[in-house]
Length: 383
Image (cartoon, rainbow, N blue to C red; front, side):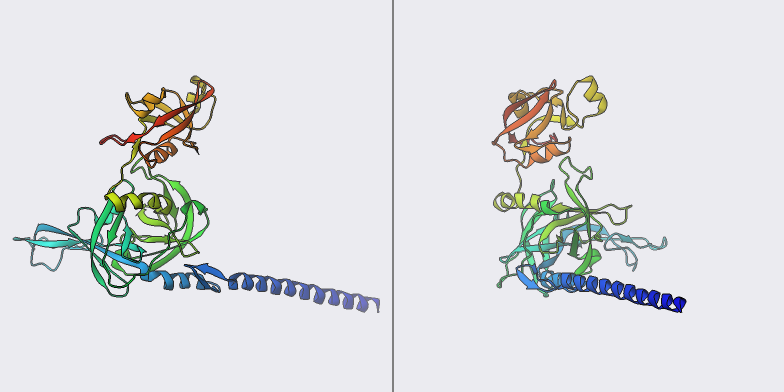
C-alpha cells in the first residue's frame, strides 16, 4: 500500500513538473510573439513585423528607390562573326582557335552597378568606380522608367558619386541613417543588381567596422556577411529601421561572407561638396605616422601605448609650422581620440581646410598641446 502511494505521489509530481515545463515554454512563445508583433517604425511608417516579415516589409517599401546604373563608354575593338566571346560581369567564354577575329568597329561598352535615390528631385548615390571613365550613364528605375543620368560629382578616393536624373514626378527615397550607431551583430539588408539581376535582396549582419583594405590610408569600411557581388556596387546597405547605413562597395575575391560598405556618415560629409563643386577638397597636415611597437615604446621612452607615432614632418607643412617633431605621439586630433596610425589620416582628410585645430601629443613622456591650421591636400601627396 505504501509502495502504491509512493508511485501515486511520484506520478503527481511528474505531471506537475511537465505542466510547469509546458507553462514556461508557452510563456516563452508568447513573449517571442509579443516581441515580433510590437510596432516598428520603418521609413517613417508603422508596420507590425511578424517573424521574418520585417525584411519583406523593408524590401517592399524601399526597393522602388534602388536603381540600376548603366555606364556607357565608346570603344573600338576587333570583332569576329563567332557567336563566342566575353559575356558580361566577368564570366569569360572560350573562343575556338579556328575562329579568327577580323575587322573592327566602334560600339558602346556597358557595365552595370546599383544606386539609390536620396532626394525626390532625382539625386542618386552610387560608387565612383561604377561610372568612372564613362561617356554617359543610363538609370533604370524598378518601375520601368529609363533616364539619362548627369554626373554631378565624383570622388575616387572615397569611391562616391552623385548622379542626377530629371523626372516629371517626385521619386521614392531611402532616408540616410547613422552608420556610427551600427554594432557588430546588427542585422542589415542589401538591395542591388548583382550580375544584372534587378532588385536582388540579401540579408546578413554587420561583422566589423573600421576595416581597411589598403586601397587608401582613409579606408573605413563596414564589413558585412550580407551577400554582395559584382553589380551590387553603389547599392544601399539598410538597417532594420529602413535607413541607409552604408554604400556597398567591395568584396574580397577569395573570401566568403566578406563584403565591404562605405559608411553613410562619411558619405553625408561629402555630399554637400560634391553637389556644390563636383569634387572633394581634402585637408593636409603633413606628417608620416606609424603604429607604436613595444620596441618604439621602450627605446624612445614614449610613455604611451596607443596613438600615431610621427616618423616624418614635411617642411613648411601645417604640422611643421605647428611645431610637431619626429617621435611625437599624436593622441588627440580636434577633440577625436587617436588610437593608431590609421585613425589620424581619416580625421585629417575630412576636416575642412583652413580650420584651426588642436592637437594633443606626448613628447618624451610629457603631454602638450599645439595648434595647427590645415591646408588643402597637395597633389601627388598621400600623407
